[in-house]
Image 1 (cartoon, helix red, strand yellow):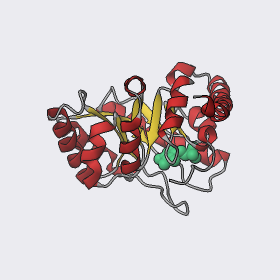
Image 2: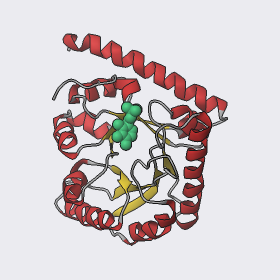
Image 3: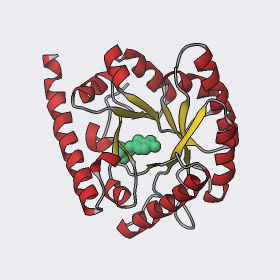
Image 4: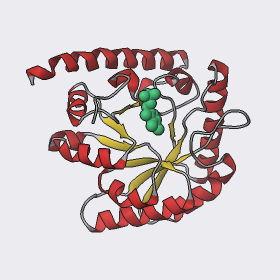
Length: 248
Ligand SMILES: *Cc1c(COP(=O)(O)O)cnc(C)c1O
């Protein structure tokens, strides 16, 4: 444990800085800090960092690659795993759905009908096998890119209602809301406008599904704009864990 001490203080300092940024942004937006979840995106970093973050009060982590995530979640201490909510935030191939359904509590990157079907069957199989005990929470990933700004994954806004219907038809899925990654290259006003569009899309989803209140938006570089636009889940990696992981 003592050899972890330098890393522990590094994470503690970075986490304090991020929590400060979130608190300042929430206050500026007149929002209750309690409605903003901080998801620490631990991709490229070892399970030992997740253990340290757990000791520092982090209760939600994000991962974006199935193989890496499966191995790391399996390494966690039982108590740590029990306390944590595991969010899968990366692009997902249908052939990985079965694996992800074993360890993920939430999938943020639902972007096409085939993936909805695969996740629903995978969650059902995982429930039958006793590998999970709850439905799989999902978010619809929306592509906010338009015109010159390249998209960064997700379905187009116009297809969100039909994808919502498909998720609702799933037997083992629970729709919690929407997710987006901001298009690259936007300035402050552009980010606010993009996240504002996401909030409007979220409102139309809530008309269909009142309980789908989550808005997953904002990363290390743009969490302030996301909080200002109503984000409920921030996915923050490098600002907490550092800019590059150890070689794996
Ligand atoms: C890596 C990643 C993040 C975190 O990004 P940072 O810029 O390191 O905070 C958030 N969301 C997704 C989908 C990611 O892949």
